Amino acid sequence: MGYLEDYGEGDPQRERIFKGIAILLVVSVVLGGVYYVFFRNWREESQARQFLTKLQEGDFPGAYESWGCSVADPCRYYPYEEFLKDWGSDSEIGKVESFRLGRSYEQQSGVIITLEINGRQRPNLWVEKESKRVGFSPY
Image (tube, rainbow, N blue to C red; front, side):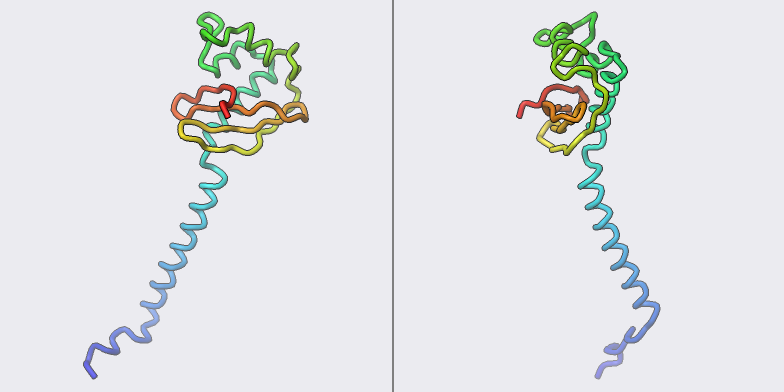
């Protein structure tokens, strides 16, 4: 038997360090998983929530700006009048009294967010990751 074979055996300080490292790794993995599941699309969901809040408050020009357009400089293929037909008080959706964001699905360049407006399922929203522009989901 060599003189280093029993080195550190039964050392309580060493065991505490190894247990502490193991617990830290497990907690890190669990917290990382929670972040990934619940908060990975938080910015995009926040942008969709702001858009729907503007609709709820009746700020249609502000909501239209969430689409990357403005009343003064409307989008080429989605003019303000069409926006009002889709989202205005006289639209199929009607005045937004209440809304709830559902699940969000990450795609390559954006996030699809399911919606419930006034207690009914509505078309999914698409929020670009980089520009945070809101739009209808292409999927």
